[in-house]
Image 1 (cartoon, rainbow, N blue to C red):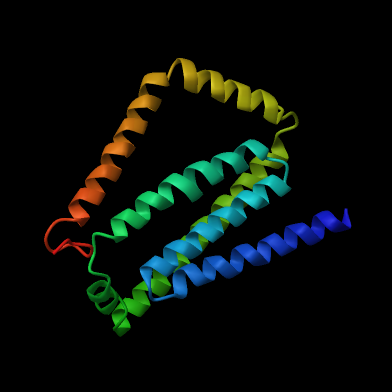
Image 2 (cartoon, helix red, strand yellow; image 1 turned 135 degrees about the vertical axis):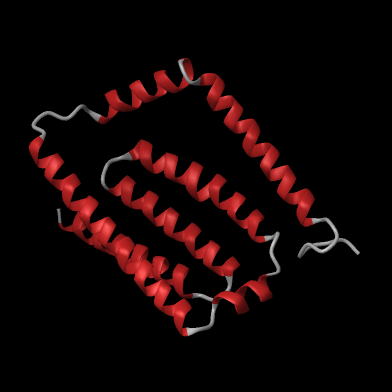
Length: 174
């Protein structure tokens, strides 16, 4: 029990540290890499809490595929001009603080309502049953949509690389 608590709080500190680094570093590429570490830490937290399937999905989908697409989109921009345009000004700082406070308020409100919902439910299905139902549904009824989404993500990845190599992109071939 003690080691579980130590692991939980250690992982929580890991998550808080890298989440703060994600929003405080000025370089977008570094922010993306810190976000990857945050996603890996979140997968570790899910694993520590016994949600092994969600931990695997977190690693594959978010820490892997989504972050690769995010970094490829960052390749399209002139990062020096983007940093200059979004890193200055009193109004910009105030908007950042207000939107962060609003986001924290939404997160706390939804966490409070989800705790109330969890307390009111007496019987919860086991994780194995839920995972099995999700797998059956995904690979029967929604198989075509799942495959189309995979092809769409591949086309987006190829398009981002092609556009970033064009004249004027950050990685243009001269």
